[in-house]
Image 1 (cartoon, one colour):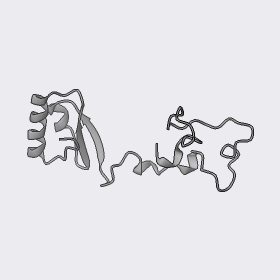
Image 2: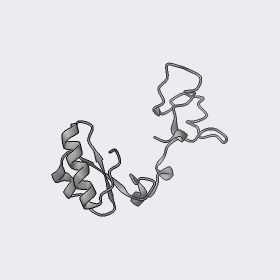
Image 3: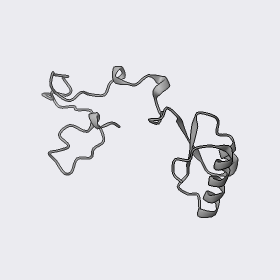
Image 4: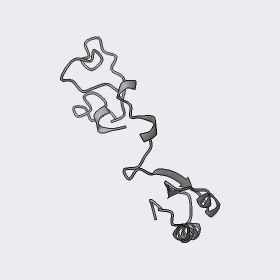
Length: 107
């Protein structure tokens, strides 16, 4: 979730988490969508479908667990090695990615 949609008054209370919660208060200015108050997430504020999930370079991300999955990664995609992959298999994936000229996001 972007910085724009933090939970209301999260800066005032330590116990509140950053994750968005819909305001339900009777007098809540955010719920009533008043001017000069932080915006509430809505469908009209969503990014276009083509752009969702893209990395800043305009490429998509694929989670890879082994070399076989890396070979299925197509053009316009970048690989992210899963956190559970060990050192030996990680080195094999990096070696294969170099051969296939695939960008690895977390080498």
